[in-house]
Image (cartoon, rainbow, N blue to C red; front, side):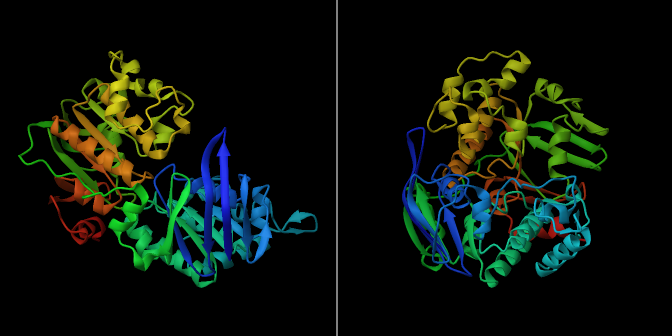
Length: 477
């Protein structure tokens, strides 16, 4: 279905792809993996007509093609579903699916035909929880993803690219996505699947292509590789363990305590965060995990209950008592993308009037690679952007750190670096609360796990529980 041969691309004299080959068969799920900066996104954007290659050829279904615009790629049967969806929230599902291609009858948009066709697409995907007339802003992230897939099918796509499709999904929604991906492959569509999550790669992929430093390392059947071999191919070194060892001794004193904390989304929260301890926070999407982090940080404050050292009324108030928050969405809430790395690293210090010395040394400590303090943050990989967020907080050394999805959308090498930094902070006496939708990460990093359900604490588990034990508490009726 797809054959890309010798693809090369440079930006401003920097070589980002060199002689890359990629083939995908009809009905095949082909994973494209590699560290951030390996060239995955650039290769997919060339296929989608966003970038024009400097050299190389592309064939779709045996026919040579040259895409100068995304519309040309769509007409050739290529659809790409980006990690950040391209949907209009104030329009209906049907209006989004047929945006710019609305059926017309007697000079007017034929809404009935558009909604009927959209309904048929949704039914073909097994979707019954929403319909063509629903506004997109009222849909969950998982439902919006279904809309993107329906849009791809409406274009008669024969090649569908999915970029980090599970990054914003809760665990129970990931299984639904797996079903959709297999359904697409069952229709004879070639699915190119980009992900940093090794488990889903092995559960879904038929073939795996590994990119490193803009070049193809190998293409192999998924059945011929295991997680260790794939990591070695991606990062070029052994990773003896995915997670650093837990602290040997008991935690210290409680640096943050909540009793009966509540607001519109949370009810009766009792929680202690102790010095030197990493507490995992688990729960399904909508359970209140992010809302709890924002309440502790004063962004959506508790309105009832007691909190020590005090209940913050605002983020500035929380920072004043030694609480920091690494937000779930680093681009929208954690960084100023058009400013330099160094400027971002001193954002909190500057806002609070704290001293700002040692910034370059901090950037070295968080393992920014390459260490370019004057580079604009928007030009960094996701992993490096997250390291800048960590440096921003380390300049003021909060006693309590809240991490909301700290490794979302970063590669395995950057994940290891972030995990090491979290353990270093804990060893230095910081109390850490970590939210993660990846159960292996939550289990591997946490000294204990608190599980939320419907805005309440459903239970607590000691270090190293099974995934089943976590899910039983998270999903119990």
